[in-house]
Length: 115
Image (cartoon, rainbow, N blue to C red; front, side, top):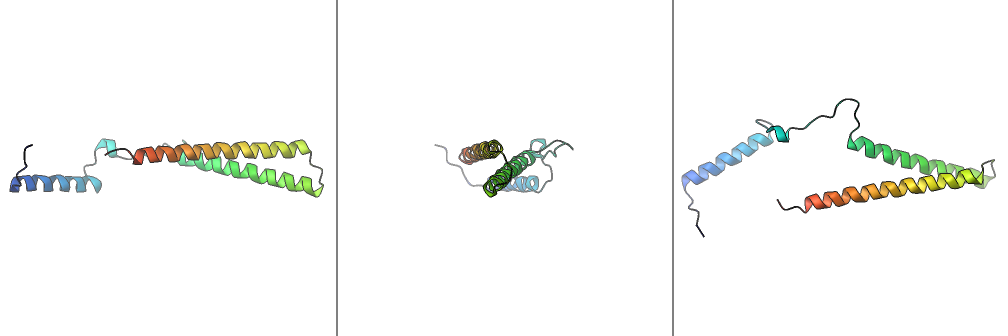
């Protein structure tokens, strides 16, 4: 094994590398790979898609609750509509839960990658 000799030139080289990293992190001389792309106008982002799915799931759950309560009060609501609304809510919740689980698993995999 070759031992590294600490010399002034090695120290200066390392300091220059650290300063370059600091400059890159501050936004100066940022490589093209690291530049953040802004989404095109009108195209949904991943956040928008997830938010829309959660809002839709919540709306389906509220509708199922409202129909169920109306049926319990004796209002003119067909039982088939109540059961269908509850099933739609259940399926939407399960789908949202599975997406959440996949995202968390992907995050854990990324965090466990060796650097």
